Length: 193
Image (cartoon, rainbow, N blue to C red; front, side, top):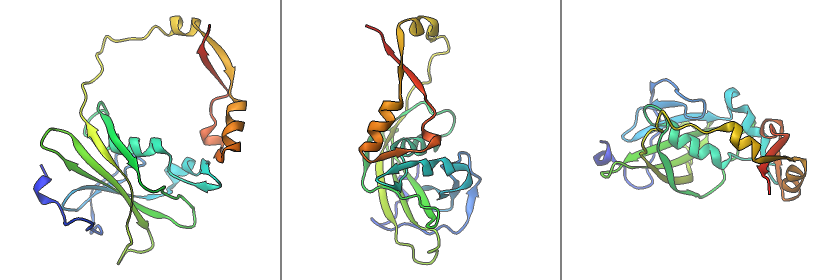
């Protein structure tokens, strides 16, 4: 466990070198640090689709990406859950202002893990001003049973198709604009009756 190696509150390391390659396009690489820390630069070519998530014109990291980051940092398949996720400040994703994003994990004695997601301007390597964007917990969970299967034909028979264009129009009116990468559904289904 790394629990006894915590840095003083508010102190985040500038990485000196990567100690492991990237295992996930959002996660980035494991870096040398007193705490279990992954670092990536966003937006990167592999995550360019994130630019299609806009709120009032600004490209921001979607909430689902915070969850994915937390789950991707575990060994093996993501079978746990994210708990108590708090978004403190949106993470901007403008092409002209690349950001170094760090996921810092702290194992807890009860088997859970707390995490924090920070970012700083990628160009500022000497004295970066880190912003804490999110914090939460990760609880272990059992793997899904191999024999647990859904009857998709039975589910489909109980559904009716619904056009999603009006839904996307309502989102745009509210200030949330999804670009092509986030508008992959053209029809969805809801339970009939």
